[in-house]
Amino acid sequence: MKNIPGRRNAVLNSAGFNADGFRQGIGKITKKIFSLTIISALTIGGLLVSCQDKNNQNNKTEVMQNNQEQKEGILKAIDLYVEAGKKGDGNIAKPAFASTATMSWSENGVLKSVPIQALFDGFSAAEPMEANYKLTSLDVEGDVAIVRIESQFGSDKYADMFTVVKDGSDWKIISKIYQIIK
Image (cartoon, rainbow, N blue to C red; front, top):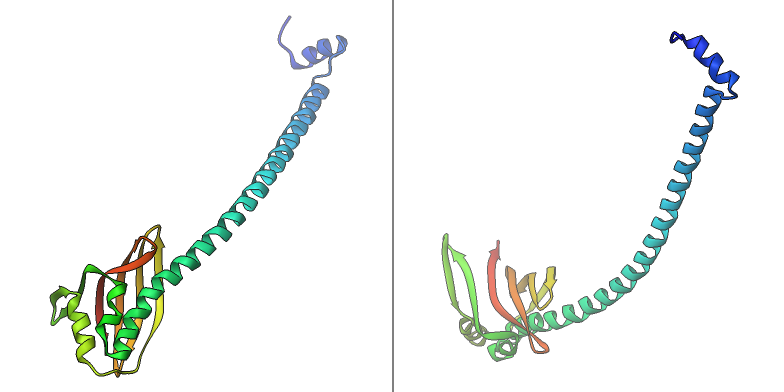
């Protein structure tokens, strides 16, 4: 038998098989399977997201509480630093700093770095003055933090940056760097 398209369809049709109907049936089944797969995936995905959102919400609340406690502990050290300048008493700042802390700055393009005792001595040598600060950034990772403030001691303004590390239940400043704001 020659391969003639019309004759082939006639043979298939005579055997009770409709090729076009078969293709349409397969197409409908494929569409239904695809639709069910999509619906199942969306449903499962929605359930997973819902569970994840609930877990994330609990984690966010815990993180926010920890962050608030960390922030308060860190700012306690910063408050002592500013209070020492305000009262002209370097001893007030001592508990805020690690004994090995340093203070660094750039003077005429040259790095200057001194033991933190120089800061305490400077505060104690000065008269009490108006002092305040504004927190501009606080980045905490576990037991370490980087703090940036804009401070004012008398008429002098500074950009102060601190590296802070948790020591027991306290936070200690281990380094202070600063830039005079003109």
